[in-house]
Image (cartoon, rainbow, N blue to C red; front, side, top):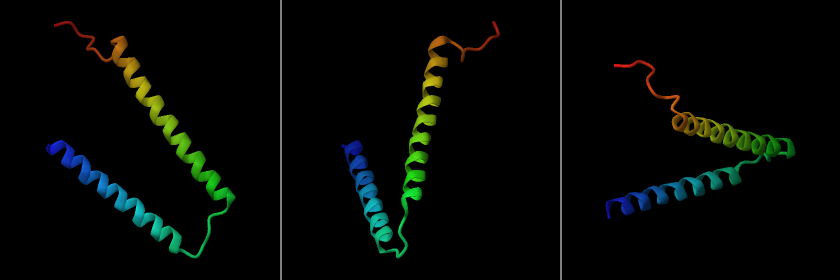
Length: 73
């Protein structure tokens, strides 16, 4: 029960943050051009790719035993 409550509260906070960000974004006078959107999309995609690649390396290293201690007791 506590887990679902925590998920609900965090979800509500996320929705509120997104709504506030969208409202503030729309109230600004300056617009983002095509180059700005392209930079935003490329940055988001590359960030995701780097994160996924690093997580893949962590799992690969763990499964191959590279994280084990080299010293014998």
